Image (cartoon, rainbow, N blue to C red; front, side):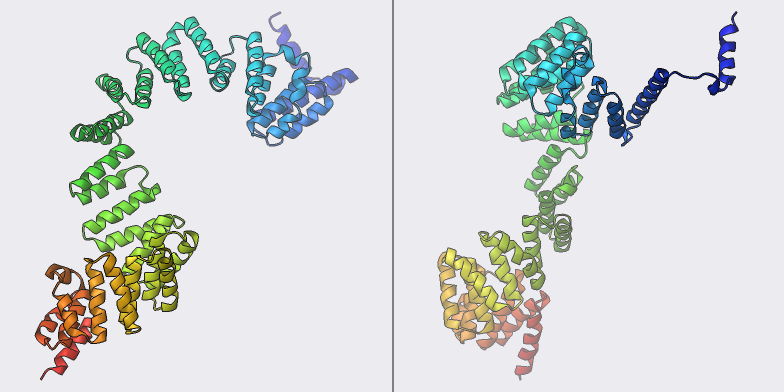
Length: 521
């Protein structure tokens, strides 16, 4: 007999199907089974046709709450709540109200709709029918955390009592819930319960540290974090938080110690890199500061850090590298207003006035209250010899602030450079100096006005007030000084300053030197 069953199966398999005629009812049932199998396979394969298959099956079995439940579930999975609305009434069917899965799906639907009380009620009905379903229990607690934290806390307490092996984890979650709701005393009590059960519970101690930080109890926070460090489980984040606390209490040596350790564990750690870079800047270690910023994880995403690197490169007297950095930053963040402004300033410094003006014009339109952007735009226009537009920008600045010294000086210098409206230029220069009387660039503007007016002795008197180092560091000032002495019949002194200007790359100085030589016997 042991061969009988298998032999019968083989015989049936070899028999033509036509030999087994099916009744109409059997054919319908077989067809329905195939429909179900097709739907199940489509769902398993995430076939985009699964909605259509489910609808087709529902048309054949319009009373099937299960198919409607599946349609709701699939709609929620792809976040199309409107589609779920069409079938959510399945829960009213008698068979559905006896099925825990039906209530669980309906609870998820209510949750997605923002009806938290309805979701809580549906999850409770699901758990009444199947109290051991941990997935549903987890979703239920998650909803309660937002809708009713006190009720969630009671549920978590019950879970901790019934599952002592997981009690420390459960109390930790309870603490995190109260921490989220800023109920710090309740959170601390829950974390204390967890630590009492498991003194080395990392997340519970971190939770207590969070509570102490939120309530400004920094030394207690340090105690928790130092305990984790003693246990050998301190992460880079933990160490950098310890460093931040020592910064708050201005214990910078200890702060540096912990930030360095954080960086050793995680080279790109942001707080560590930021603090150590700032420390390097204070020590004048700009190259080190650059490296530290560039090694942080968010350097390529943070325009402020790239701007800071450009600044450090200037401090290192690396103007080309500084300019390249700000160029790259603008390429990465072309819509960032601060980056655009600084890039335009760099272009102005390099006398690329038209390019700077092209960037600054829309910036001024977007931020009409920004005096800095408007002033730089005026500089660019002046350099591009668009004097009418430049004066329009200056007048806009002066209309808002009649004592805007840089704007007054720019207009005065522009008129002096062109040799136009010199009396008016002198008036603007005097107004600028009244605001900033010791600004050397403003004094130079007055010198140049005197030169254009032929008042050479007055110009020489002012030139003599310039510190020697200031003249050496500014080729344009050296050129003006040389021209003043040449006009005042002091060719030897003039030659010294003109040569200084020529060596500094000021092109007009070369022409002035040649003219000075040719005029001498």
